Length: 61
Image 1 (tube, one colour):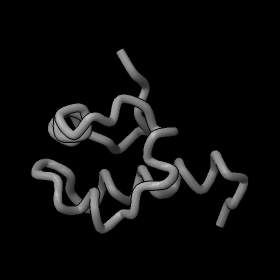
Image 2 (image 1 turned 135 degrees about the vertical axis):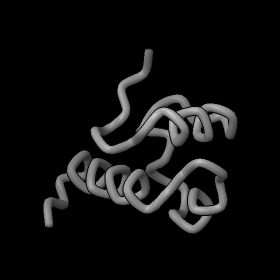
Image 3 (image 1 turned 180 degrees about the vertical axis):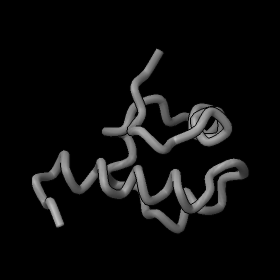
Image 4 (image 1 turned 120 degrees about the vertical axis):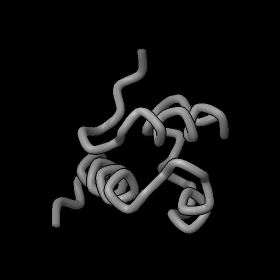
């Protein structure tokens, strides 16, 4: 099972997997507005993904 950040619930993970995203690193070049369109991906999951991506880039805010 792929590890997603805390705050990304199972419906969001299913939506990401259905769209072909199986790892957080794959989302580094994906615009968040694209992810918002996925059914099952809510604000909490988007925030968790954005924070995790920023941390992986070393941009802790």
